[in-house]
Amino acid sequence: MSPADALLDLLERERRALTRADFDALARLADEKTRITAELPRAPRPDPECRARLRAAADRNARLLQGLRNGLAAAALHLADLRAGHPLRTYGSDGQRLALSGAPGAPIRRA
Image 1 (cartoon, rainbow, N blue to C red):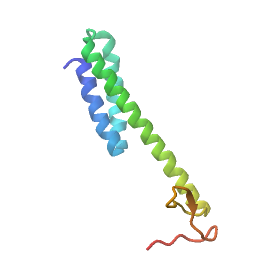
Image 2: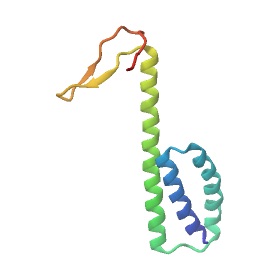
Image 3: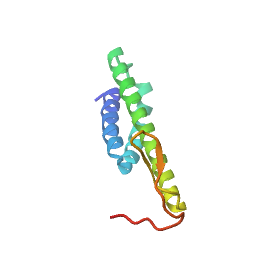
Image 4: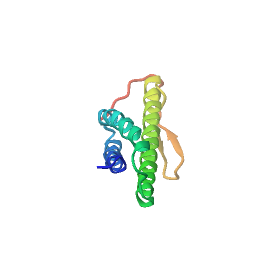
């Protein structure tokens, strides 16, 4: 398998790990990606179609990674709000944000 084909395979496995938020798999894939990309300069140049597939797969994974980062940041902010006792928020029928009433710092009880 050429380094370009190996990288395409790795990018597909990375996509699956990103969509599952499988951080252990992503860590393992990072080492493999480093090894494969180190081989690329010594390998024959991939044809234009293969390069286009590599670019598309890398761009797709970059978008997935950014989405995962954004989701984690939003979750961290939400947890910080809950810990600080900020009111829970929802959206009304008109689409505007509403704060659910409750005393700051009061425990959150869920049914």
